[in-house]
Image (cartoon, rainbow, N blue to C red; front, side, top):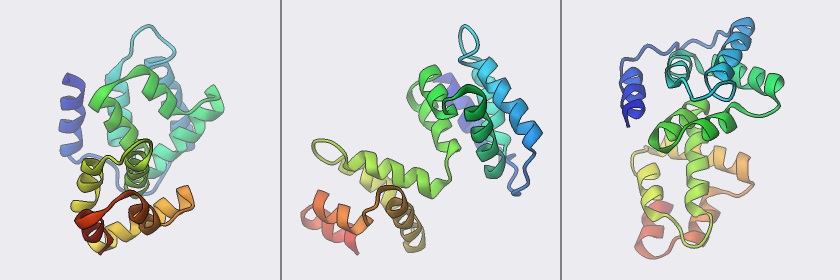
Length: 166
């Protein structure tokens, strides 16, 4: 979609604040702006979502999430899921989370339900070095109370399980 291309292009420009500074007053204004751009209006102004989430630091995004929930009694993620769809929605949701937590969440989704989405597991784990996989595994354990090794052992089999378990 056009919004997915737009957000991808904006991310690739590398303008995100990488420091950990945050401005709580700005976070409140950004939360209000997000609400007015989505649930608080007819239609959705996707550009507001793109501008805020692509440019804000991780610390600022966390502050925005906290302020949004205080103001509107539901998460900004719920608002995104209601107001957007497809790859654009997935991208916005990914920007809400620290990368290792997001990947742990995606792995959990791949393991849930009838059968395992092995393609998702491959995409998530194949592009990571050992240190990154260990960080994802730590996040998985802290979020779901099981080690990633336990889940891999119960959900995968054969050569794929052996490769992923190394």
